[in-house]
Length: 219
Image (cartoon, rainbow, N blue to C red; front, side, top):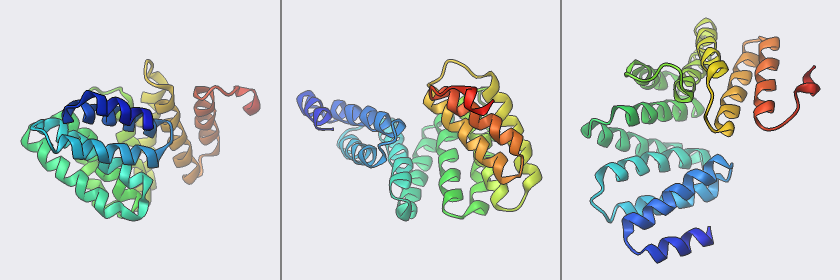
């Protein structure tokens, strides 16, 4: 992180420095360094707050809300406030694709905060928006809905959403392996919660393969 700060400081302009912190936050997040990612996203938000880059500011606000909620689960209400503010700003800017991501993150946060009923309108709104039908983002939204439905006791609905997500993941290529591995792992956990042991083992196997482990341990 010290190197990122040096690069950002050398760039001078708040927007350029904010972009460095933004990218650093996402890289740290996907590598599992959530606390470092949270600090970088906080810095990015502060730096873009000094600019007139309205869209970038709204986007980074949502990213910081997402990361904050994972780095500090006890601060989920603060994270939710950031995400909802970002949602309002992106709505004003008519950013449909970014709204899908924001609504999915709001729902995911609410599910993890044991507020699944509140999550359902957001994730259903995300899925109702026009988007490519077979992407990791769509699979992610389906799995968030599955988790919400499971939490409210709708196991049949949960299984249906798992099936949709699995179909997408099985045919999706060209994305970061860590992203696909995470989605397969979530799929496995949901199958396990629903008592579908064979399906859970298959999903765990896919996650392991994507992280470089041999499938022989599962044979």
